[in-house]
Amino acid sequence: MGLDLEYTNGQTPLEEDEKDGLLIPTITTRADLDEYEHLNIEEAMFWITSKTLKTETIFTEKFVRNLHKRMYGNVWKWAGDFRKTNKNLGVDKWQIPTELKNLCDDALYWVQQKTYSPDEIAIRFKHRIVSIHCFPNGNGRHSRLMADIIIEKIFNLPLFTWGAGDLIQQGDIRTNYIQAVKEADQGNFAPLISFSRS
Image (tube, rainbow, N blue to C red; front, side, top):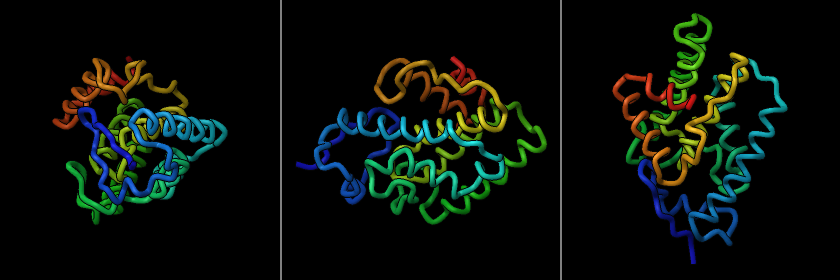
């Protein structure tokens, strides 16, 4: 039957060959996919809570890719691999490693120099890694977990609440989130920082 997905505002469609990377053939709907991905992400979060992480470890390609693999590796064959196609957003596929390295270097500098508040460092990282769009799918959830890791493991502050609701399903919370992301696209990070703590 194959995987037939409907996309909500802000979600990037999968190419047919990316859909072929699905490891669980019984998944045929968005609801099924969301459920399996959610279970996989919970495993990744449990893995993170048990780890002590150095700042220098978090801001590496290896960690970024490993986290994505841990979040989606039970569901997608390509989990943790950079995308091989260009999308409706993100840098050119060939620029991903360079842009990610630049982001990690910048973020390390922000932490060391206290360039921004802890929340702003985490949210700026989250926003920029989504704009790079490293992976075929799951970039938004991956970026939010990266922000949570930065705020908790580096700054020892509470995790973000991200509107305290479901950001996957279409609704007011997702609409507010997308609007805050668009503000950040224009260089105004205050709404996204505020949303992350709401």
